[in-house]
Image 1 (spheres, helix red, strand yellow):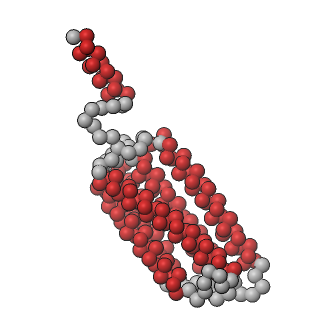
Image 2: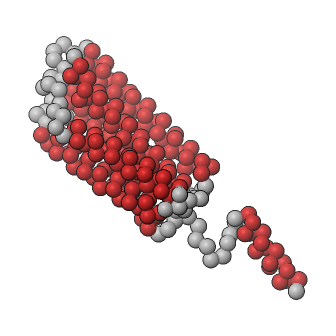
Image 3: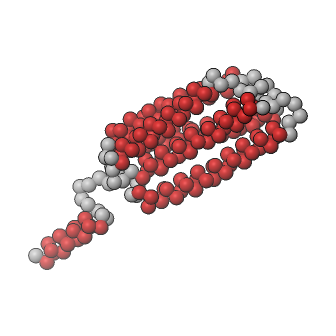
Amino acid sequence: MIERALTERTTNEQAATGIAIPGRKFPVGSKGHLASGWLGMLTLIATEATLFAYLLFSYFYLASHALGAWPPSGAPHLRIAVPGTLILIAGSVVMWWGERGIKRGKPGQLMIGLAAALVLGIAFLAMQGFEWSGEPFKLHTNVYSSLYFTITGFHMLHVIVGLLMLAVLLLWTAFGYFSADRHSAASIGVMYWHFVTIVWLAVFFTFYITPRLG
């Protein structure tokens, strides 16, 4: 009787504290902004944002000291960059929509959002690669070309990391790891993808818009 009472008491304490509940599958990640991943992602974003800021500053600094035309071969065409930008923005929108769904206890909505963002991200990469192949200059042609390929290439690397993140989140969602109460990993992934989109808007404005502003 004493042993049984102790067992029942232990089980009740575990259920109350959330330490362990037999037969229940816990989602991935801590709850809300208490998750350690939030601070880690914010730190990563701050670091990468600073790096992009320095790269873009280098572009404007060198452009202001250019002796000839800038860009040397004229402003980049918009026929690929504009659709690519819209595609990346659409990816952020569907990611936001998917995150909103899991907050309401709808994992299916999160899956659709993640899958759509994954496809859109791959399309953006393909379009960017196609634009690279059609440029009249190479990495070593001049200062402008070095900046162009370095900055856009660095952004593409971040997109690739984001796509890997989305793929993992999609797999975890399919396994039922997220719920309305615990979905920090998904929210952190969405935050990173929004960062990638915002950075591209800055890159797009720098390379494609400012040359047309004189």
